[in-house]
Length: 240
Image: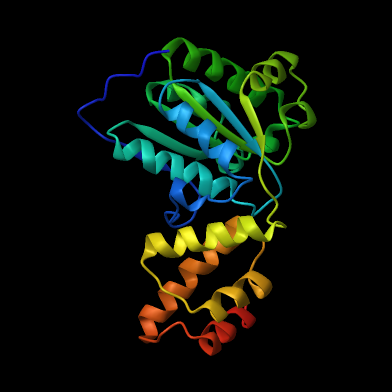
């Protein structure tokens, strides 16, 4: 599949994902992230059309989708990042129409349409239109396509055709250490070895929560004009 021509404009839409998430693909370091990031890079480079990631809440799925959109937007492509949880609560399945006109669609919370046949059909048709349009799609859910309990077999089949990856659960300290160092390095934050060790032991284990916590530490340190010493980081971490 050839790479799409870059448009002369740039557009990104984010719905119900809170403040813009501070995440980059480079943050997802560590041995258990390598295959996932490679697959997303293949998606963005036009080698594949769809990628599906799944895992427990707060393991970094939404951060990953935001990072992919950021990377593609920086190349001049149009991206849209949507939470089906919000769309289901406030809009009709028609809200999925015309999304294939973006060059990357990132859809979060696929599991919420489990009992909604109309939404499943709408997503199925979106996937077909996106395939015809050579639109890249990155999807995230709490379970794999075959374990989501979807009633539309054609949708399950279409989702199962995507490169599918289970998100690391954060239990591996090597992964957590790599993510921590990568995210700190991108932010140009230097922490002493004892602070890093404390965060590895007492900080959030799930990648999504860890990245949020680093943003929180950085923000409070800037607001209070304090250095992120072990004592200060302990105070901020234990207060949560």
